[in-house]
Image (tube, rainbow, N blue to C red; front, side):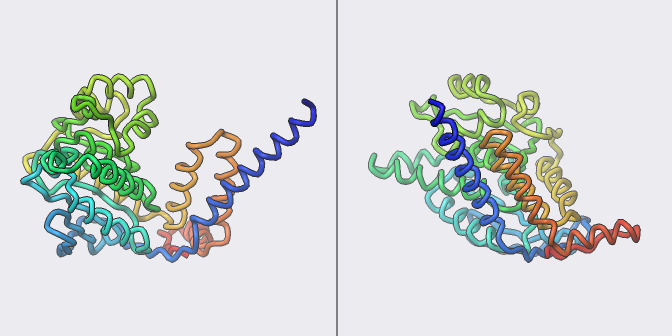
Length: 314
């Protein structure tokens, strides 16, 4: 028994070393471009498809990208085509070093995303369902793994896969009139886009089980009370209160060091999946990535000269 302890400790150290190596590898070279100081400004629209609109904001909002779901006839449900478009957009954004924050919102009043397209699902052969749900899960995972902050602006209905999409974002804001829930058990299935894993991590295991078992739907105030969302707003006449709050948050993020934002997200995400000691080692590895950057020296110089820093993501 005495000889087993060092071996177990060695295995633990090897596991931690692999985690740290993964952390450093995922950081990669940084060439982030800082946008100017934030203020309101909107760009011309670039469409990847009618069902998903991708907007790169301009002027002082440069660096903020808005993904607008626009499938009104299906209440923004997750069809094969919409999943394809989301996958294509996410693949482009994760390698775009000019992107600083991503907002996911709805272009359709009163709905964020109603979940799976059940009409389309009903036409699928049973052999098609599993692979398609796996594709949805993979796209939602890709959103969760984006290297920059992501914000879900929930101005309406977010059910099933729609809430799972929001759960993959770093921050969720919602109008008080919004409705949110994982309702799959009503259909004799379970959440398949990460909901059984991300909801407990967001609000705790016991309450997550209660909500999934009951298929309960929460409004914005209830969602805020249980910690499902960070901010709740009274809906405005335009129906975009959550989106406006998401924009305000994104503007707060823009002045910060791009490399620091990237490694902070990585340290938090990876650290939450391991024990505290390993998490602190991950933090140390991530912090080390900022020490040699030009941005860190610029931050110190700007502080000394009492001026705003001019970060270049280097």
